[in-house]
Image (cartoon, rainbow, N blue to C red; front, side, top):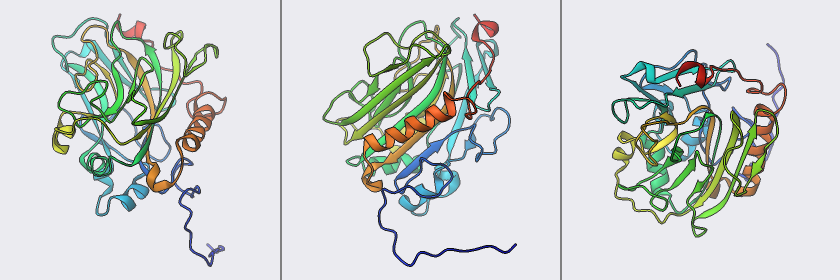
Length: 316
């Protein structure tokens, strides 16, 4: 088929400018974009245990991690349901992944959960460049709150004993984004939008989140780390300490309670090396918020009007 090729006779050197790619968010510093419902993933149904979920930012990430393959830059979906009545994993009407966890306790921690976890190439990149500035964001929907505790939603730690200070980053169910130290945190944002469209909150001390179900967007900027790094890269991966999302009674990072863990929908996780891209936290977060508003909160958006099984209808 005939077409027209345009060639610009100059070098492209401003890495902060947006480029044409698989998603408007992507830049020269993009490391990870995991979104099961994204039209570019081609994933049908509920993934099987240990299934690889493609990294939509793989092309950009391979430029930063020479020799890495698409598979090595993907994320691993992990699930355990030794007690099937304690958990339900489903695709929503809009293609996202919904995990319903029972309020009743399973026999042991880790017996009923589902989540997406990062692999060694990305973990090693962050470890090798921990002094860089990073941007991380998460979109989701909280469909049932935990009975107690905050439950880490997404995060990364190189420490044997993760805590509020011993981690690289955590975006938490309770709306608190880590690290809390301003020595390492360059910015953060949070917002929750109740189904009614009211109760919008951003960077407030109001009880979190508003009435459920609620769409949520969390982000944090990280520069350096005061965390211990005594956990090896291999152990970070095998121990699930690079969590993209998880629901159920998991035990890594901030432990979800065995009784009454939260239920929710995971829409999107993004990580960018701002030192490489040249973009600021404010610039990237403004774009992230714009895309979240378009796809989650606006009629016609990718996830607007999403429907799913009510947690109360499945397990009390």
